[in-house]
Image (cartoon, rainbow, N blue to C red; front, side, top):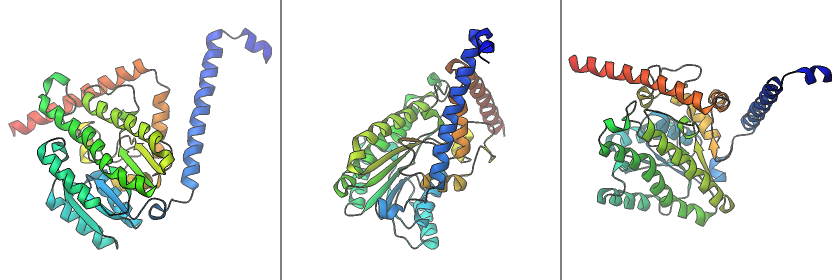
Length: 324
């Protein structure tokens, strides 16, 4: 065997070593995931508190996560821009689970404006005195997407930044003092696959805001771990919601594209586990491991061409709608 290795070219040995390292990394991540899956689910009420705050709870992942938290016995502070939608989801939650709900109407795209400041005061008033143990910053804006940066007015990008970045920061800052005082809590910031990949062309502003969320979460994780507070960025890949339709022409549920209802129990189970950057879905974790082995230049090339195809599909559909 030693003779064969000596005769093998250097590039072959290098590839073999790299392959072994990739297999070892993939195996270790799978073991971590399986260990967490086999572990008894954490009692969120006992570990963190009796109330959870969820932004964007009226549709998609936010709605499913809110329902899952209620199923686990947490009372909910629901934050969204539509009073009617908040009433509907609040009624649904209370009809299915014996929990309390508080609704706060807050258009997060108005953060750092006079209207946003007033809504933030209402949110602080709503959570004051409550045993808020979990915060889920789920609300996000993905549109405009599949566009070049220069094609959209700056105000659209400002709206995205306010919701995806400023609102996450301000809502977290509003809830953290109570957690620090009680010495326990969990903050879950909803990122995306773009939080962990080299680039996401034609969705540049969205991926940039989600990269901020990942770094924001990582730094807070280090800052507040000693205070009994767990901070995570959850980074799902594709989940079948209406938001996803702006990213891909193929967004229906599949083996690697779970529904929000299928994704939410796994996301809630991983609260406080898996470190500051967490990929709760096993198939998504496998995709992340595979992408990590791809050179950045190849990823950029494939991603750009895929998103250009998506751009054509969306523009063609928009043209058909206008003609109709």
